[in-house]
Length: 84
Image (cartoon, rainbow, N blue to C red; front, side, top):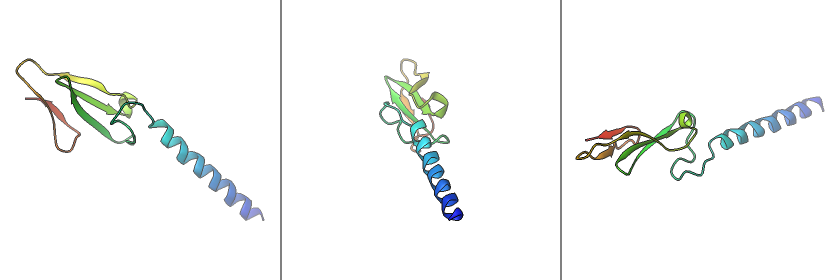
């Protein structure tokens, strides 16, 4: 009986820990949902390079504004970009 109780408590704690990980990634910013703490995403918006990760609290932040005559680009892997 003691082993079953310990196993039950461990199972419940594991489920709670898994649920908390999902909550930390929740965001209303489209395209920035579901990434882990070790992931990042980039996009172009209004000719600016935008970045999203746990560092930015899962919110899109501008990292670079492209000058006139240059165009924002994001690499195929979606993890780097710039102006060219």
